[in-house]
Structures are given as C-alpha cells and as structure tokens.
Image 1 (cartoon, rainbow, N blue to C red):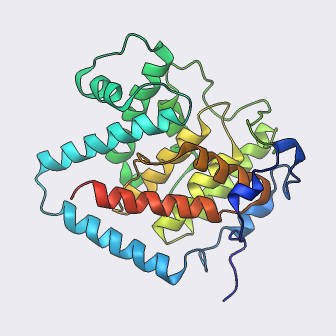
Image 2 (image 1 turned 45 degrees about the vertical axis):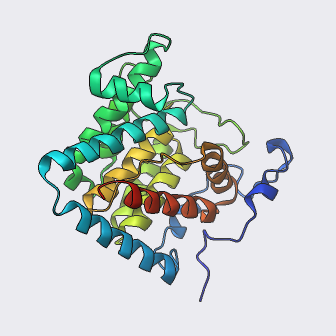
Length: 284
C-alpha cells in the first residue's frame, strides 16, 4: 500500500532533541504543496478507520436515548472541559474547577486577569455557536472560519480578519505567509480541499492542522482550529473533542513537526486518541 504523503515515520522525541535553530526543516516556510497532500487515500489505516466507525456508532447509540435535559448537561460538561483545556494550551491559568464556576455560576476568580476570564467565556460562546449552526460547517466557507475567530478573540484586543503583518511562532523557525492576499488565497484553497473530503475525521484532522499551519490571524489561530475541528465533527454527528487529558507539550510538538516537515502522523495519532477519550468519557 502506498504511504500517504503526510505520514512519514518519525520519532518525535528524537526530532526535538535539537533546538529550533539547529534543526533543518524540510519546509522552513509555508509551502502550498501542502494542498496537494490533503488526500483521503491511506490517511487512516483500516484498523483506525474501523475504530473510528465503532466509536462513532457508540456515540450515536449513547446519545439517542438521552433526554434533552441530560444531553444538554453532558454537552455543558464537555464545553467546560474544552474551554479550560483549550485556554490552558494558550497559557491561561484558570483551573478546571474555576472554569466550571465561571461558566456555570458566573463566578469570576479574582486572581485572574480580565483577558484570561474573557478567553474562557469566548470559548463557551464559540462552542455554542458551532453547535447551534453545526449544519453550516458541512460545507465550509472562509467566512465561517473568520466568524469563529471573531467570537474567540472578542474583547481580547486582537484584530479581526486576515492579518496584515508577519508572525513568528515560538519553538520553530518556520515562517508562515506574510502577504494578506496570499493568506486569503491559502484559506480559500484549504476550504475547497476540505469540502471535497468525505471522511469527517480526516476532514477535521486536516482542518485543525492546516489552519494552524497557515496562521491566518494575528492571534487565536490554534483556538480557532480546534473549534473548527469540532464544528466539522458535530456537523457529521461525530463526538466533539474536549482535549481534557491532552498533554499540551505533545500537541505543540506534533504541530511543530507538521510545520517544519509536513508530517502529520503524530498529530493524527494524538487526535485519534482524543476522539477515543471523548466517546469513552462523555454521553455514556
């Protein structure tokens, strides 16, 4: 069987034994060849595809008999976990219990800044948005992605829309696109490729990783990508991810490997593990 172009064998720990300045990225800057590699064929092994199907069947079976009230509570629990973990990955210091108090009882933890509090609240609002409009994310538009970003960075002193200046990424010398025109083109190309992918999990994996790779916004790119991935999963009646038990260092390393070498294998494996965790820990 021919190997998928994004699934090279790699030891993640060995890759990061060298500092960023001593690594030699295969792709030191954004390369549009990535779009030619976004193919479904061989992206998932037969074992992985079967497991995803079984997990999805289990999720759909689990939610079917739940009352509207219980289903709402379970989604709220997942939203709390997701909001806490996604914000934590961006340096937010709210604890899980503090996040629960904020999102369920509107109790703000006094030791935290307005920015940290607003970031958590924005996650909840964005998740509610993708849940309410989940069918819109079956066929994506660039506007859908921009709308998600706008909700996530509301009142965080972050400019809406496609960035107009270059950005750097901590831990890597990879350089995203600089030109607003070419960023817009890359986003449109990503949307077109995603809309041609049938398998929801593959579509979500590509959306999360490649949107982060493009870095279209001045801030909030990874947050937007995680919400976009969940929007895609919800639009196909798949279980959304909470990332609750995720090791954020592993997440960042897997993304940096993807940026530098266009190797998605560790990131794919990480997301598949999160899907397994979500189905086994929510709605059951």
